Length: 540
Image (cartoon, rainbow, N blue to C red; front, side, top):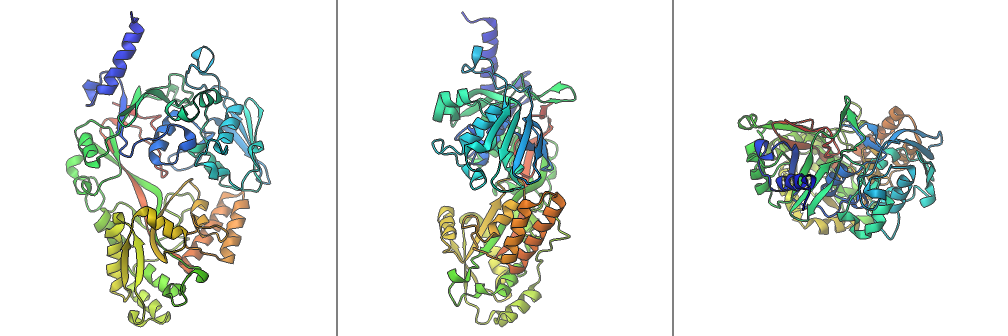
């Protein structure tokens, strides 16, 4: 016969699994509900390769450090750290009050204390070929091997690099680097993906793949706020409805607490052309609109050895003319309801600490200047300029059509070649696309991640344009050795100005995160990495 404790537990789980509407139908449980249309493939940090996995993993685990809403690095499992003067040694002083979630792999099924050896194991696991983590690139060329990770004692972890790399802390904030317990990871092997155990604010309760994922609050979570135990929520319920329209309907009916992003079929129902929340929705929805570290752009192949001898793209004046030959602001307003910001300040996006539109001035809409540049290139009013083939995919046809139509007015004929995204990436990687549409979403919150696309020694990816410039390469190398943030940011800005001058790319817009949140949900803290952090969320 089941005891009263077990009956209450079963009742609570059934209630979470079957609940659809908010308020009274959820009883006293404060359960946050969202949908993940793309599905979740793994709850193992070593496989945190896409947003769906990252969001769930961010609820279950912690790393040494984390980002706040302004993308400032903050302590997490590490309470403090030092970097040696030569930039090669990182020493982390760890919290001593953190426990893993309860699990049968531990003594008496109780989660044991986290130690420095767990960090050594977790980071070593990322670079272990037998694990085959897609996050192994984080340490490629930066360390000599597993010996780079050392537990000096239970509460002190040390990382040693082969050469200075100042964005290293930002890399360590990635979900790939979140900490797992050896006992559980090795007990399950590949199946650890469905048996996650971490130190995070929530722990696994039920996962029925492609149906529902339920997380309970971690009653022993180490973080507090104003003396109160975190998290405030009792749990999280994730569904996997594939249709974005169905997801939208569920949200509007009160069955979901938030939706992220917006579908073309519902954009006008939620947003005005000015990018504001439609007035009819304001009584039941709050809109969070913040920068997102994603730069949308057009790219040119600029390595002369890879271009036909008669290609007009050899001339930077043609590339510059394209940059100032269309109206970014109008494109964002009419095609995206002002979601996003015109990319008028370089390739590094708005939202990063080093972004400064006053110091990096990009291209505005100036058709007369575009005509002057074409004439300087030897193509007055576009005369003699051959058609330019722009590779794109179906999702961006409206944007690329807009650009092509405006460029036609100044004498530049652009024809669109619409291909599947995977095929386009293959063409870009093999330098077979002379002109292409692309985007770069930050892997980590540092401008170096964007500027690496133009570092000469880098292949494609990420250097799809095959840009190479001696001055740029020198500045890039110097930035990796610079301790002072202000000085490093100045180097980043000089590199960005150089890229604008040479014009291997056409920045289109800096993206934004849109979160539509049900009234009564408080404490959402989105940042420009578009992480989902529910640690401080309340449901009223």
